[in-house]
Image 1 (cartoon, rainbow, N blue to C red):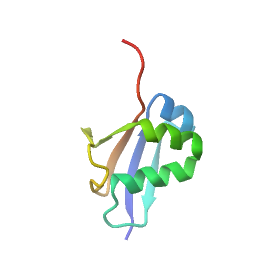
Image 2 (image 1 turned 60 degrees about the horizontal axis):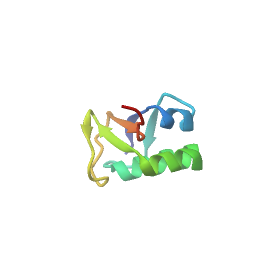
Image 3 (image 1 turned 90 degrees about the horizontal axis):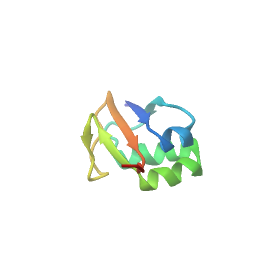
Length: 86
């Protein structure tokens, strides 16, 4: 069974991925945030991989502190790289 997840990229993550958002279909019934992050890193290459290593994530609008958090089908995962400014 597969799980569909929508990924939204912000700022430097958007530039590294080359897209603002994308739908991802995972061959897992209960994927984790770590699996989603690993999959998009592999899909978009080392440039995004470096950004992902420093990014924080929101799952359906809630900050993710533990990447072993399960990602339900139909969820949205936001990739938020560190932001500069004040």
